[in-house]
Structure formats: structure tokens, C-alpha cells
Image (cartoon, rainbow, N blue to C red; front, side):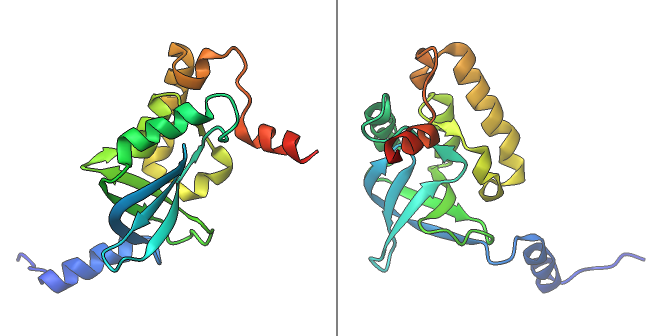
Length: 165
């Protein structure tokens, strides 16, 4: 005897698998603040600041900071984006996975060598993407692209710490 699940039961089953409180932001990128931060205006004309989850890009006045910003601007500025924001994300600005016409922008920045994979923020990265982020950073390092052209690039968290002293 075959059982037939109603579409409602299937939908509820699917929704139960999603992280609690996860949400999706759609809109147009109005500004690129840095190599890992954008401003998105939604359809209600509300502006949201979004950090690319799992990334830490060089600071504006740090080596490669402007190149990282320019790379992200090329990918997203004035384009429609979809941002998947995990439910556990209570930070401001929000951290999320940014997509432009199906292209995974976070991953692209790592592949271009424009940011570090920030393992300190791993909770904001979907489990399915963590291995890809680590591999993208490792490949960029090995190929010496972007910031990895430098023999010892200074991670932004160390740069920020040095500026506070």
C-alpha cells in the first residue's frame, strides 16, 4: 500500500529542516564598503549592511584593501543579489551568503585571493560551504593570486589589532 503525502505535509517537512529564523534578503547593491561588506536596498527601499559570511578582507588602507574592494564592486555593485542569512546570525551588520545570478560571491572573493576564510566566524557559514571556502583559500594561496602574491600578507585581524596599540 502506497502512502500519499499531501503537499502541505511535504512543505512543513521541508521547512522543519531549515535553520530556525533563517531568512533571505533580496535587493540591489547600492554600495560596496570594503572587500567583504556591501549595502543592499530591498524592495521596500530599506538599506541593509551585509558582511560576506566567512570572509575577512584587507582593511581599506591595508595592502590589497583597495583591490579587494574593487573586486567585490565588480561582482556586485548595482546588481540584484540574494543574501541567505542564517538564523543564528544576531550580529550587526548581518553576515550572509551572497549570490548574484547564481554566482556564489563569497566563494569567488576567496578564489580571487581577495579575502581570508575567517574560521572565527564559521557559525555563519553553511556547513555545506565550509570545505569549499577552505579549499578556495588554499588554492589561491598555492597559485599566489590576489593578496597571496605577498610572501607574508598580514591578516586584517592582526592589522586592526596593531592599529589599536
